[in-house]
Length: 185
Length: 235
Image (tube, each protein chain N blue to C red):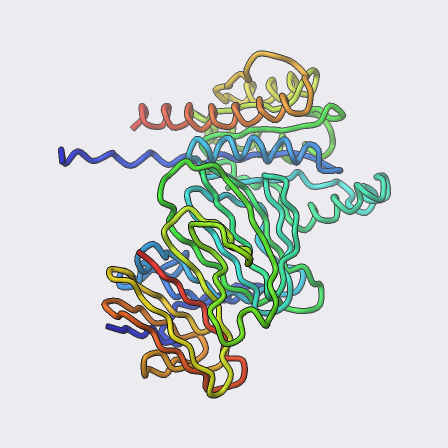
């Protein structure tokens, strides 16, 4: 026996924030979270709250309403403490939303507040999504000082490749966050 | 050698919607004298209020077994598994290199009462897996029904876990007895879920556990109707 011990990993926490009504974007968020867990991160899954939950339920199909009611029960929205305490933030949005959508407004306010307190310095950011959604979220995070991690090559693909990309990105975010934190120590 | 862990000596936490008794160190309860037994790391008895539960959270490198004593749990995970788990069913989840799951009381009116068990896997970074099966009350009556182990069962299904550990359940009525041989070098943890039993002459009540080492046979006897015991045979 050499007696050499593997040093304990630097702990990192990744917040995965998403907005979903029918569960498809939630699945993508779960996959990104699993990727972060693969990268040995602690995760916090946070769903952006509906501005008007009852109205949101009335607007979706009966099948989506089942999922929406479940998500209302299972998730809480992100708090300032969640984001301030995290090493990385991954935003997951559907093609139907963007950073200025009403559901995301509380997060924008939170980021403004935390940036003013210089509480976002050194944090890693990433976006799971495509097209306008991805670019608007990436601009939001980069504009608040996050060090952005780019997803792998490829735009919108089939569901399986999107999930694989989301998972790979989650893992990469965990690994980059750990590397940055280790260097900073 | 049999060392008894009395029910009242377990850790306890009450979060309003969740009442937990911790046989071993877990979460808010930390006791260096009770950091698991062999590969058995966690044995929590939880009562979850109607409609409440654990939102999506992650696990890694752990074999997680859930046994429901009353009510039903709704499970959902990142592998796409969505199930309801009730009495006389076993759920075994290999977290492997990472899973995210939620578990809620499936009822809006009745509490759910369950035991969650964590067993350390034989290796890290394994492939996540989910297994669940039901069995009848008769299968555990007066005999040890193997619920989880390292190999699949024969006629009776067994949840395969990634550890040299076996989990059995039995229900013993008054006067009913059974024996379990313990191979050399093996250890056993017995946990009484309901009622009262005798284990090699030691009386164990509801919530009591017992660590067994250097014994070659276990003799269990029932004292009350439907005394129910989980038994873990461990390397």
